[in-house]
Amino acid sequence: MNPSSDNRGKIIVPTRPAQNDNPLPPIGYVPQPLQVSPSEQPILPPSQPRFSRKKIVKLVVGLAVFTLLILTIASIHGSNPKSTPVATNEISITKNGFVPKVITINSGSEVTWTNNDSKVHAIGADPYPADNSISDFDSDIALQPKDSLSFIFVKPGTYTYHDQQNPHSSKYHGTIIVH
Image (cartoon, rainbow, N blue to C red; front, side, top):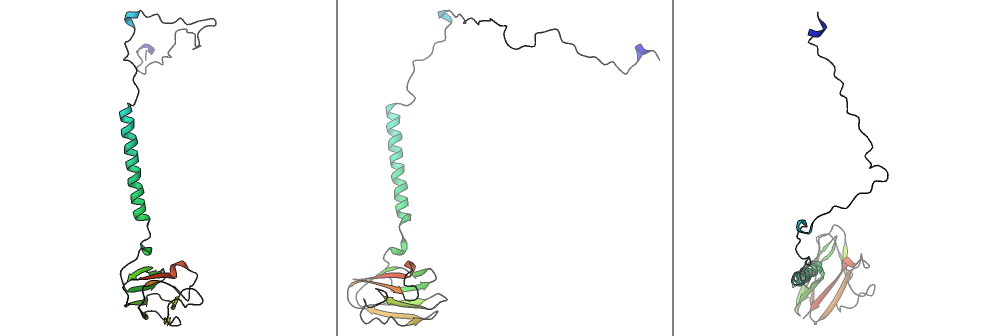
């Protein structure tokens, strides 16, 4: 087989022309500023502020309205619904306390406490341990689960009460407003 007619090909090693591989300009080189004639200079629009006074006022007013909206929503949702007087005569005793915590009734109305918890509770008139702010109210009755206790409020006023089993727990304190 003739080596010149060999079909295996040849290995070709690329060669580079001789160059200076140093990317830095030679020592002592001082670049010259680009000379542009006045007719070739780009024409730029006069500078204007990014925001006009009108846009800034709109932005400030918008932020104020947004802030007021957020504060209004927060005050509505931030209010404790358990502390808002409810027109009902039924109070549930749960593991989370009295529900509702505050009720409003008319003079001569009967209020019923029902123990919907799995533990024993006893309703006591404030202050603890005297339990004597509601006249004729018997605070010594222990309410077993599912038991109820009723009392008729004759005299207008604001009456507070607590659970005798949990007298220092705020969730077991309630208020009755009698009109």
